Image (cartoon, rainbow, N blue to C red; front, side, top):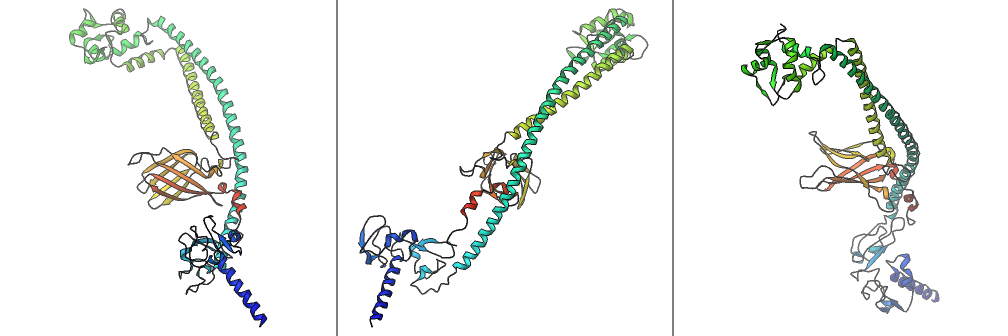
Length: 460
């Protein structure tokens, strides 16, 4: 009989104790130790300990009824051993629906809830272990990319130094070729002056009087007539208007035609001044003069030398411009922030595509994002702007701005979130608001060692 009372007392104490601490996490158990009175956790009221978990709400914060649904602000703690613990509103306690995987929320209802925590925990553990394997592999690949980034950075720095040296060498060559071209042009000018003295004068453009006379003498009879002047000569201030018969005759003087000697001493002077009349086809006049000049061997040699130096100078100028453009482009690339260890450097000059319904999106890191429809229309969603991650993960997001204008006004823009993965690929594209895009970009260099430190929850 005595043993019966002892067992009964123990069972009664166990019942009272379990009633009082039901729905409480281990960190809150200290508030519910066996005492004569209970202080509401918010400090608002002291009640007898018998009123804890008695299905009547005494505390405003609901702390006296953690295991019942009596308090509207109450919370019930699901221990969920083998899975993730969590809180549920106390209104869901004993409502016939299993909210805790260990069925602890339905301790006094008709619901028959199996304990599914172990199965859920197994799936959770398998998922977390898979994530950890991915993280391990991602971190391994990241280290490789960091090492490659260091080598690539050094190569680009060396390339920049080489280009700058080439630029300096080309600058010296430019000065030398400019000097040689100037000298060749001076020698050509001397040869032309010697030819002028022999042929009786030059046009203002350096052309001889003879080829101009031959140009005007259309029928090659060594005479210029009014009809020939009307065909080849125009007024300087009215090129569309042809000479009249009277005007042509006036230029020829008393005779109706003019030979070379007369032309050189009369009409040639008028053409030379260039203030009233000129040859209608200036290109033809230049070509005619060049034809006569080309017959002189000294002028020919000087002309070839000047042309050779001009060609060489042009080549060097083009090479110098190309090298400086490469230097400028390389300097811009090297000025970009590629991460603390330059781990993102390998993304430069790479592009990644993803087709979403009728659109193909192309992300070119540190450059531009485009959207191309099935009909071939391509628009810019933004150009590289800056990193916009959190203080803990500065390189977690990229912002691309100033894309093509949106039909509702403003420019398109995109935010790219970088996530850890064993491959580098564009995974998803969404448009939560008009012309504002968000993208998920997976890459090993986004893997962070701090994630590994979090590990798996101790209760799993």
